[in-house]
Length: 322
Ligand SMILES: NC(=O)c1ccc[n+]([C@@H]2O[C@H](COP(=O)([O-])OP(=O)(O)OC[C@H]3O[C@@H](n4cnc5c(N)ncnc54)[C@H](OP(=O)(O)O)[C@@H]3O)[C@@H](O)[C@H]2O)c1
Image 1 (cartoon, rainbow, N blue to C red):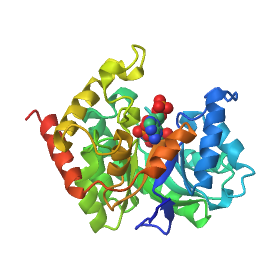
Image 2 (image 1 turned 60 degrees about the horizontal axis):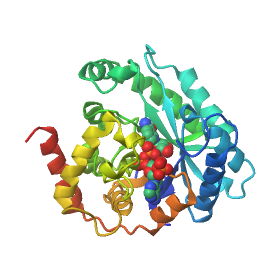
Image 3 (image 1 turned 45 degrees about the vertical axis):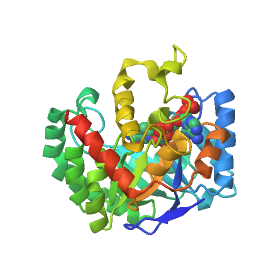
């Protein structure tokens, strides 16, 4: 396992961050999925993964908590959690809610500290979060939200309960503001060959000594040898749903950029891509089985920066209809 140090905060994390969104039954009742997930998380920790991503929204914390409660390496692990304040349609930031979400996570994860808080300023309807109107509303509230966030984060830091706070921006317009805000030590956002929008902020983050944590390196599972050929998927595979049409069109652009297929597997290429730039400190991969973990651990970081640049440029061209 390779490790990287955050620039903004004293913390060394594994390049692979264990994503817990789909690794356990949401019912809280142990089943086959949860037993595969248990093996995957235990093996990941054994193999050196020290960074775990979770959210109360995933409803899988029950399993993470159960595994970590008595785990001998519990105190060597670092947690990154989502904290959504204000949440959907909530009118304003609420410091008590922010504190409660942090303290609940500390309890559920049997942890002394949340190393990285991934802060999401929602405050609009879910359907509006990436719209222009959503941006206008969120940016109007930005100064007030970040000022109150700064105060509560400082107190929690003094109490030893949290480390760095990074923004999950949702949009490029919001990211532009969040990168510059002193309260945020960087960004946590989607970044993979199909979602490259945040690439434009990497130089500025470096200049400011801030960090980037990438999410969903395999674009939710599309960028795998099993799913890149959409026509070969079973009729009920979720990647056949209309909402993934755009992702497969983007995949066509990536194929053009790299010349049909990567040298190794698609999953290894995508995983390495999501770690290729030095400003990226870790990538949050959804790991549901020990097999997923093996593939990620075998990956060699061999995606040159000019490939990153090329895919970004070509994807921008595609988006702008060139
Ligand atoms: N807003 C947010 O903060 C946000 C949003 C989304 C996700 N996340 C976090 O990011 C994590 C990852 O997101 P994600 O699961 O959507 O995307 P991902 O990591 O890009 O894709 C994970 C999926 O790819 C497949 N997979 C994983 N490793 C593989 C391997 N080595 N070989 C082949 N297939 C493999 C698995 O699908 P199958 O099991 O179906 O094969 C897995 O569910 C989540 O667990 C969560 O912690 C955060």
